Structure formats: structure tokens, C-alpha cells
Length: 99
Image 1 (cartoon, rainbow, N blue to C red):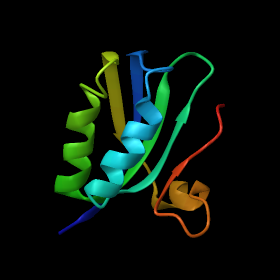
Image 2: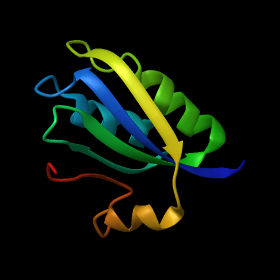
Image 3: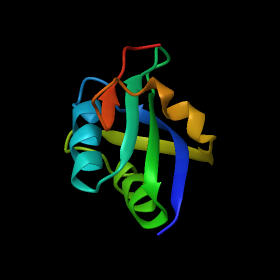
Image 4: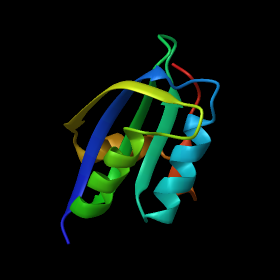
């Protein structure tokens, strides 16, 4: 099992539909660490860290999102593990404030 860290930008109707909560719940379910937050441009940004398989599954699930979301585009790229420092102490996956 190889540990990877990927940053994901999700665009479409992804705010106001429970996307961040859904992402947090799914990440915990699949044992993925990281964080999720809204962006002022209307997108959702997430950072996923975990096994190659679990992170790939999270990205695949984000292509559909929760029931009322409409995902138009997803971009993902590898990032350095130090990006995980934004996780709140005591949490494996955090919902961060909008930027």
C-alpha cells in the first residue's frame, strides 16, 4: 500500500448541496485523510491522503458527488505531504473555512 497526496478542484453545482459534508463522510469511510473547503469562485477544493487505491476511489466518487450536486469538471494533481498541515489537530479529515 503506497501513500499518496492529491489536491482536487471540483467545479459545477458543488456548493449549497452538502458536498463538503459528503466528502468528509466518504473520506472517513474509506480511511482517507485530508481536508475539504469551499472556494469563493464557487468550486470545492479537497486534499486527499491515503493509499493509492483509496485516494483514487475518492476522486472517482467526487466525479458524481452527493445527490443534488452537478459536477462539471475535476482537476487533480499530486502535492507534497506538508499540505496536510492544515488538518485540525485531532482530526484525520477536516472541513476548512472558505477561501
